[in-house]
Picture 1: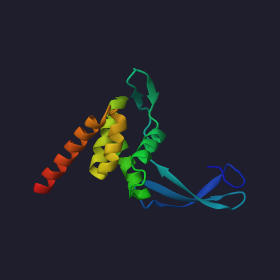
Picture 2 (picture 1 turned 135 degrees about the vertical axis):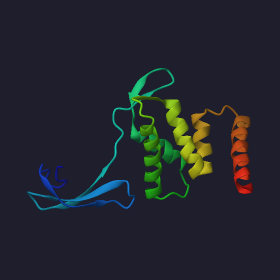
Picture 3 (picture 1 turned 135 degrees about the horizontal axis):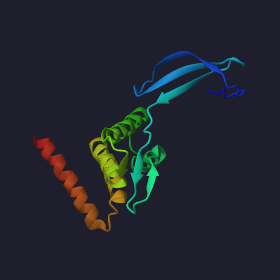
Picture 4 (picture 1 turned 90 degrees about the horizontal axis):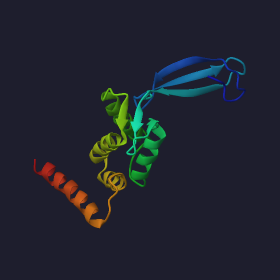
Length: 157
């Protein structure tokens, strides 16, 4: 790891501990040249997963695309940074559980919607409206009614 101040290529780890989100490791480092101390975070990365698009094209899994889609869905919603990280981790964990080298973009969207539905109903509807390409207000209403029906059934039990 290069020092962010002098760009010297050798640093030593002074301390390692689990980060507050419980999903990453926080490492305290010190530059062996200038003595500057800084922190880095290490987290799990999905490797070697190809996403098969609707047109058949394949591309490597890109966490940034997931993050951007979730940020749009959760815009102006009450979510902490830690909860957001956990949501991403849960989605990626479910993708890894598939144990397949390729997954369709449709499957990725279904996994995202499953988690958003549990976490935030408004974000779920926002994501679903884009992902499912709602054509009109009726389609939107239909999905909203399904969501409300599920909520009523949960409250009765």
